[in-house]
Length: 423
Ligand code: EPZ
Image (cartoon, rainbow, N blue to C red; front, side, top):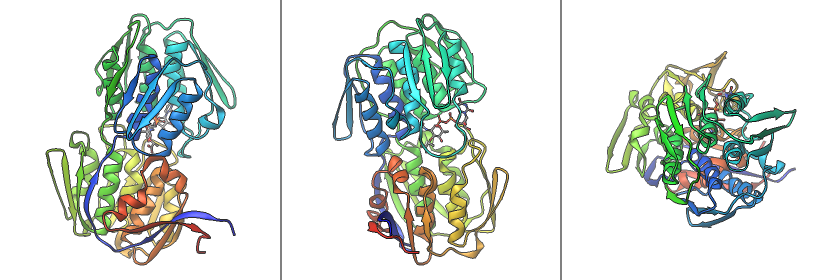
């Protein structure tokens, strides 16, 4: 019997209390990547204790820069002496992709092995590569690597065929020191990109239009050190809200940034929930009476794909038929088979899931296959009758700080155990 680490969840306990929302993983990662663009000290504050941040700091150290951590503040200094991302790290997570733009801008060369990360579709990088070429780089790639080189980067208009978050971030970083003006047309608008730009501007970059579909970057010669906080994590905020929705209770989310939570919050409001925001505290309450809700994911400001699985768990408890259409990734329903083990009535038709929540859910043994899918399983287990067991915690630990502690501090019966999983 193989030793496993898993969550043991006993459903049915209401969640009450306060949760302090930390900085967004998907802001911290590109911000840390940008830090190599100056040898001065760059500090990103409020970084979460998650493995993606640990891996990113390992990538930075492997490139030859100094990285130190004091509490939630991560400080980077020095110039990169290498231009190849270590394969074992590039395979650990998708975020190593964010080094492409920063290293290309800083050293004129970067080699990356096919990045790992969650299995949620093909996740090509053609928009990144096309953009680099538009800025004057040579890009060659094989089965499992990509090599980008540029004697000099020159500003240009770059049209993105899709508002890719990572491509927008990489192209901003590649353009920051390019000669002349770059306009990214059709850029992604996510709040995490706004955080990256806020840091780069503090470092001396000349960027405008972040958060809109057209971002303009005027190249500068040098950047200097800075200190910057990331936007609060809207996906962790939404995940805690989903847990309260299915388990019932009342939570105060300290530090939640309501200005970027519109699409996350709106599907919860059609149920018997109560929500108020004052002074950076979001109060969310639910009596577990959930209404069937149709949701479509999309690029910001639409409902985020990263909330798809956690909210589908809510749909499993809503009386009536809900639909969940996933338009961002072509293969992001791995959690459906696991939810069906709990008795969920979910039919899949192409990129849409139809969820009938009237049957009730029972605890089951489930396997997380990706970060947000795993979060969805935990949310579902918190509202179910009986005990559930969830393994695949290496995925959850990529994006949630001790997720069992998040929920148990609010009264949820969740513990992390090691041993052999029940059959
Ligand atoms: C970022 O991934 C996030 N990761 C993802 O969060 C998030 O789900 C995604 O944006 C969408 O919001 C980080 O920020 C570290 P994309 P990214 O490029 O940049 C296609 C999580 O759970 N595409 O916006 O990789 C792609 O295949 C993670 O925290 C191309 O076709 O996402 C996908 O279908 C999961 N060509 C769509 O665009 C490209 O060159 C969106 O991808 C690039 C992307």
